[in-house]
Length: 225
Image 1 (cartoon, rainbow, N blue to C red):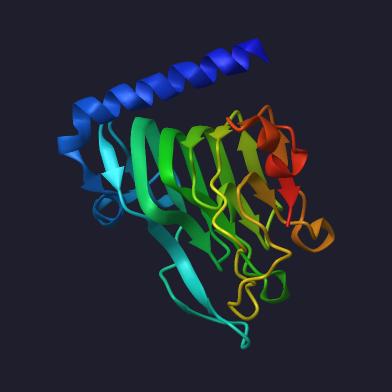
Image 2 (cartoon, rainbow, N blue to C red):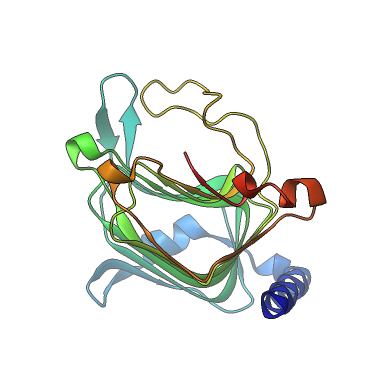
């Protein structure tokens, strides 16, 4: 536990220092995505730069039409994000792979002001997969990492999530309405229906809340939703 605390403190200090030094160098994550090309078996390979802040969210894949359980948009692509210690300021949005059968692998970066989501639907086999490794997520909105309607062939390894922000009830995928059974403020929100969506591989992650009362409630750390 002490080693985890030291690692978290070191990464958060590094994040604060980099923000102070490089705020003027911010570029959007969407721009980097659109300028990237194929490599290593992926449709898009994003190689980020150490000490650079990338802003805004990124949707990979498609969106769901509530009630109809139909999807629109695209493209659906396999994406690799190599963070190299970069800072992703999602500005209240998400880094999301959604309603497709594609892969997202992201590693070695700091994420603030948003969350990472894998969003799927097993009935029509729209289940993205991939990995989140060595990522520090500080004060994410809703959740740090959210697996929604997927889980099979997803690996979460050596991530640190601190102080997910409770923003009220999340929205049900089937109708787009807020649902009291889907709370937020959870660092790791996993799909509860593992028999349908599969079980993710969760290895050596660390979760913490600065509020002692919240930190003492296990439901704010790892929860099936």
